Amino acid sequence: MEPLGTATILLAMCVSFLLFFSTWRKRSGKGKLPPGPFAFPLIGNMLQLSRKNLPKHIEELSGTYGPIFTIYLGSEPVVVLSGYEILKETLINLGEEFSGRGSMPIFKKNTTQPGIIFSNGEQWKQLRRFALATLRNFGMGKKSIEKRIQEESHFLMERLRNTHGQPFDPTLFITHAVSNIICSIVFGNRFDYEDKKFVTLMSLIKKHNNYSQKIKTLLYNFLPTLMDYIPGPHHELYRNSQMFRQFVLERVNMHKESLDPNSPQDFIDAFLIKINEEQKNGHSNFHMGSLLQSSVELFFAGTGTTSTTLVFGLLILLKYPEIEEKVHEEINRVIGQSRSPCMADRSQMPYTNAVVHEIQRFIAIVPLGVPRAVTTDVHLKQYVIPKGTTIFPRLKSVLYDRTEFPNPEQFNPGHFLDENGAFKKSDFFMPFSTGKRICVGESLARMEIFLLLTALLQNFTLKPVLDPKDIDLMPVTSFITIAPKSYQLCVLPRERD
Image (cartoon, rainbow, N blue to C red; front, side, top):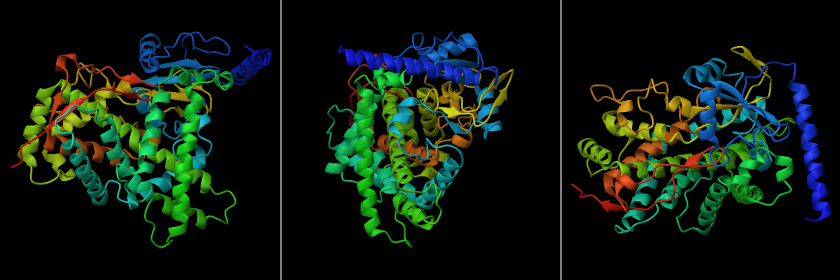
């Protein structure tokens, strides 16, 4: 290593060390943080925590330290919350106090401007309120968006028919369909699957997912100052985000030219109109930066978790063909083959509805939740959590609660069925989180998962390329989310009435 490089890294370590003690001194005396594993200066719990499966390791620590404990990502403390009662007390009963967004270094590096997901305070409230109202205006949770999903479903079914029963990886097809639905809301139009711009977008999403799963990306959250000087996927993740932001900027400029203030066609149009309305407000939260970041966040959030849930769901059904067969029987009885599934069917399809819920419960796609932060000093049990402290609300601890879901490690649609076979709701079902930071697109995601999965099983029978008993459901983990391992399947057309 060159002397200058060595000196730079040593300087960075010294700065980080000083920052650690500065943070420690500020926090000491303000309150009593929950106990946790011993943390070293500068690196925190980096040496103790598993870099390959952080959510699983934190789950194990919960067994040792209980429902409330503290870990250190580098010099920053993170309070981990587990169990339904604790999450209800904090995210719901103390919703305002726990409504901040946690500051994770890797997020901060890739988020140059405020958006809906990573903003805080009044800025977050205004952007979230606007996003919810705008998404509802463009049909989220209504018949109009249901029609968009059904239309995209037809394109997806046609692509699946063209596989002609040959093995293929469903990830790209599913991601294309889900992405096009959010594209129609944010950008105003869907893309042809072969469109060069769309192909580029899908490539950026794939690279983003790959970079997010790398060890160095996780390490960035422990030692951001040091890792800034070390090459690796965390830098590629940043460049990837910048490329997508450039795509959004191009779409925004196109919208500026065609904008009709009296007739907004999509989210970008509505945001541009809001920017114009607030031009005289020198401190407005609606500007080009928040538009670009909010659009990026909506696209990634609206594409990633929903498509992953569907791809994982298909893998689960491949492993349990008897469950798929029961869904086929219910589809035949309620819908048949002559029309597309609709949301009105869901109330008449308790078993299919239970399968959809069990898929989301079982995979626990965001096991640690998206990081929160407390907006003020909070008294919780015998502890005091200082303002600004990052919070990990362990959603999986609720989705795998043994009193609510017996044998939670087993995939069982009966978790959401009563003794009469009717669908049974559960307060413990919170894959979209809960409280004031609950996912903005929850209702859209629920519609997409039900309609796309039902349409797929209406048209096709799934055929595994492996013996079902050999199918591995162990996920691949990143810092926040999980995904299934890459796999292939065949889809065989079902006979029509």
